[in-house]
Length: 274
Image (tube, rainbow, N blue to C red; front, top):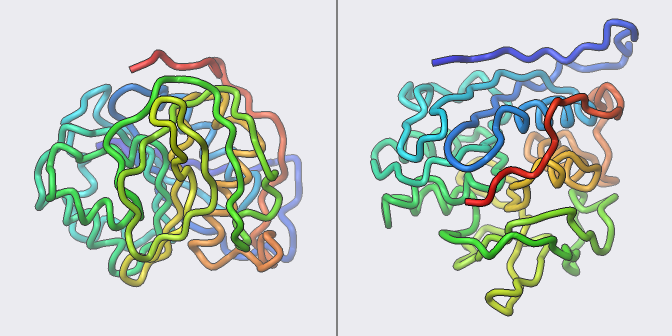
């Protein structure tokens, strides 16, 4: 197991006197089909620029589909964190008891944020993956061909959407087919699928047990993730699920980030198609 502590501190800037104790986030990442090495940098740096949060990162499993992340085997794996961000892709894991160990921590109250292929993780478990899907808020097991997407806001008032444009043409995309929306899920954004000739939700909020949840199926390509639209949306999602987002769509006092600037990464190119 490798846990990397990521402290994003600008040494040239004084710490604001009104800064609160930062949120403690855990990013779980790794698995098939995506550039997780660069995406973990985009996620942690990008969100920390927009929210007062420090990170631990668990990046395991190489490009395997059937790897079981080691930290999940500890019954108390999530207790020291304010939020868990899932950006993993382990679709061939079929152990229902292992899956319950993940979902129970969230059900007990630890907030979650779910990105892209986390939706397709654990799908080999069949109905044994339903607690995972209920936690996320939607069920998806497949996707359309790669193409740019026109993302549209739904007619819903929510602070996570404040600052997001009425429409957003993504630089690239992989639209997930949404098969089912669970009872406590509230969709926020939608995109039309050329292959299925129907709309599919691409962002939402959910309630699972005591936990708030935010999810988005967007984020296959690095250039989608490394955009103001995506990072702003997901950062507001993190702040919302942790109770640190105001009704105006801005961080509450003490939870603003370090300030937005370009993320320096050696490779922000599209990743290969599945």
